[in-house]
Image (tube, rainbow, N blue to C red; front, side, top):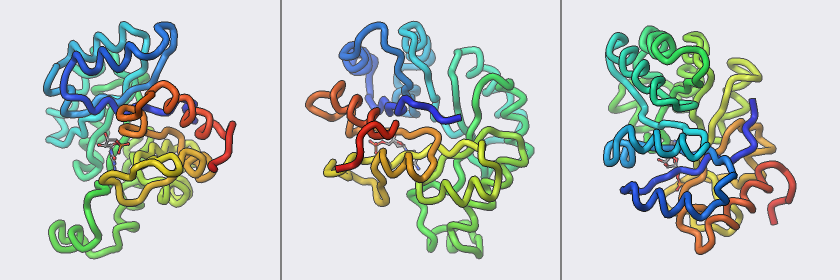
Length: 235
Ligand code: C5P
C-alpha cells in the first residue's frame, strides 16, 4: 500500500500559482498532489481536470460530513472527476462512510479524518463531550472507519502503529505534519521527518510548505523523496 511519492499539498489560492508551481517539474514526471478546500473552492472542478491531464495523481482533501444520501451523491460527482483518493470525517458515522464508499466506487481510495490535529484533548472532552483520551477517540474512530470498509485514515505519524494494530497492517495511514530536519515548523505542533515516517510505517506522507515555499521546490521535493524512501538518512 505504501506510496513512494510524497504527496505535495498544493495550498495555493489560484490556478495561476498552481500552474507556475507544477511547471517547475519535468513534464514527464508524475507527481501526487493534494488539492484542499481553498484551491478547490477558488478554482472549481477544472483544477482537477487540469492536474489530471498533466498525468498527476490527486488526493482531494474536502473532508465531507453530511447525511449519508448527500455524501453518497457528492462522492459520485467527485468520482467522475477522476481523483485518486478523497476523504470524509469519521464523525459522520459508519452509515455515512459506507454511503461515501458506495458513491465513490472501489477504485478510488477513501480515507477518514478521525480527530483533527487542531483539536486538543481538553476541547474534545469539553466541546464534543467525549469522556476518553484523545488517543482512544482516534483509535475508536479508526476502528469504525475500518468497519465501514474504508481504506484508511489521516493521522499523525505518532498514531500510525497503534492504528494498524487496532485495524489491519494494510489499513492506510496517511500522515501530514512532515518536516525535514532543520525546516521551519510553521503552525504544525507535532512534526516528524520523512525518515521517521518511513520507520514508523506511514503509507503516505503529505508535505506542503517545505516544498511549495522552498527557494528551489524541485530540489526540496527530491530530497524529501529520498528520505521518505529510506535512500538517505536524516542528518
Ligand atoms: O505546509 P504543511 O506541510 O504543514 O501542509 C500540510 C497539509 O496537510 C496542509 O494542507 C494541511 O491542511 C494538511 N493537514 C495537516 N494536518 C492534518 C490534516 C491535514 O497538516 N491533520
